[in-house]
Length: 369
Ligand code: IPM
Ligand code: MN
Image 1 (cartoon, rainbow, N blue to C red):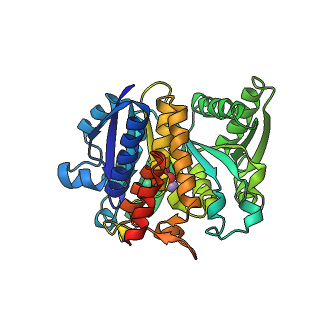
Image 2: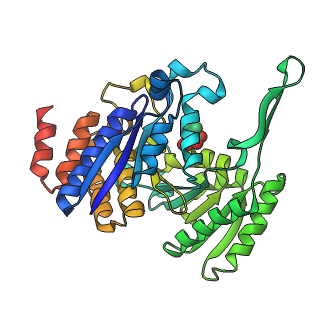
Image 3: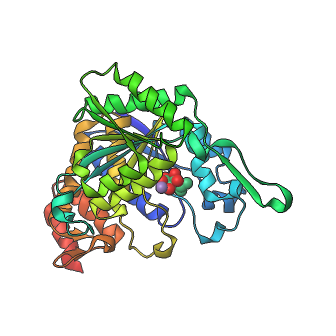
């Protein structure tokens, strides 16, 4: 198959990790006889420096003309003092909104060989396999008004806004995913306080009627935060609004040992999907070869699975990552005793050697060090 992929490297470690994921995608294309072409475009601070805008129009056009989008990360100290609508993060929010990427899938899978990297007990995290489905284009992230106001600007407002349709489509997505998994949906809200959450809960009950095989439970978000750490294995699909999903997915990343391991997919109803690691741009380690490329590589695997329906290809990448970890290869964020620390590029090369089943080449990389 021929596919056109837009690449938005962004800031900080974004360029290194997307470069790595491109190489892995190319290796997968070669192995399975596909043809992927890549077109780079600006977003975030890099775009602000070049054009004055965090999301230039040209970038949106390139994305719209592509079959899928690979994104690194945005943000950095350099742009921290810019006004809200000129910050790098605005670029990320704007691309999500302009492509209507309402469904953010954040799978959390505990890798057996990383169980020591987590701060949690092995017996709590072993076997964790859950999917956070985060609403991504509504809620308090986008509601109007949002402003400083009043005398001396000493009053402030953000707005949590949802339409019924927005809630329906994300909950529907969660049920569809649950049908392909363990048939359990946990809907997370704050229905004891928020009006929006009460409509959320009501809508979840309505959608559930269409899926009699799927078990639905409701959890308040504070309780969900606790339950994620106490007994994460109870969860299959967790569906929640934008802000709650942002917070819970960072928390859930610790179940895998590192935020550097978590991939994500952001999907619309019919346009190109966007695939990016859950972690940020880590400006403190940018350009030093310390970044963990695995979340981006796993995001590329999600692209193959969800955008191109290349299940076997996606599984091959996931398997290569698992084997690489089992063989003791690590980046600095997940290093432990008796493992081999690799740079970002070396990790990419090792994953590629495992993918192309050339493990000798992988060993040669570690011997060089
Ligand atoms: C994420 C990030 C973004 C978000 C930021 C960078 C705007 O934290 O993708 O989770 O809050 O959605
Ligand atoms: Mn986040």
